[in-house]
Length: 332
Image (cartoon, rainbow, N blue to C red; front, top):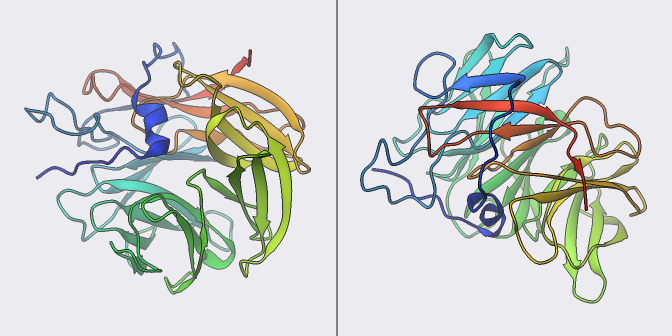
C-alpha cells in the first residue's frame, strides 16, 4: 500500500519546478537507498503505475552547528551527520505504519544544549511523537487524524519551544496547535498556512494576508495573546512561507513572485518593524516540505547565507540528496 501525499497550496510551489543541476560541491550528499546513512525514495522505478502526486524522498532537514539532520521520511528514521559527512546518529521511530510519511521534525535540546529528543509528525496516522535521540524511546505522543482541536488534518511544520513544548502547523485544518513537552494539548490559533517562527522567549510569529494592505506579521505571547501587528506589504506576491527570524527580529519569508511561479522563489529579510532589508531569489527542490535552513547566526540586513536542499527524487536511486550553502542571486 502506498500513501498518496496531497499537494496543498504550499506544495504546489515546489512540486511544479524544474530542478537545476546539482552544484559541483555539496556540504552534505547522501545516497538514495535503505542502507546505513542512505535515504529512502518513492518514484516510478519502484512502483508501476506510479499514482502519487509527485516522487517522494526526504521531506525535511535542519542544520545545527556543524551537524546536518535529515528526515528519512519513507524510512521512518532521522539521520545525523557531522561536518565531514560521517553518520553520527540514526534515530529509528518505532511503531510506524508501512505507509508512513514523516513530514517534519523539531530537535529539543538537553541541559548541555545538544539535541536530546525530537518531535516528529507522521502523515499516515497524524500522530506527533517525541522520541529520545539516544535510543528512539517514545517519550510522548499526541494528535492523530481528526477535525477537532488537538488532532490533525495534515501536519506540515513542527517547531520546539521552551521546555520541550511543541508548535504544530496543520495545513489540513489551518491552525497552529500548541502542546506541552508531555504531549498535552494547550491551545490552537488560526493560521493561513504560511509558516511560522518562534523567538527565544517562546513568542509565536505568523503571517496573515489582508486584501487592502497586503501581508501582516503578527506576534503572540506563550499564552496565545496577540502582542503586536506589523505591516509588511508585498501584497502582489503569493504563497508566503516563514523560515525563521532575521538578526533584526523580523521574519525571513519566501514568496512566489508577481505573475506566478516561474522556477524560482524570492526570499526576503524583514526588520522587526516590517521594512524589507534584502531580497534574493533561488530555485527550490521539488516535492519537499522544509528545504531551507539558516546558516549560522543571521547576518544583519542580509538574507544569507542559508542552507538549501538539492535532490531529484524522480531520478533516484541515481544522484544524491544534497544540502548546499547558498547566498542566492540578487532579486530582480
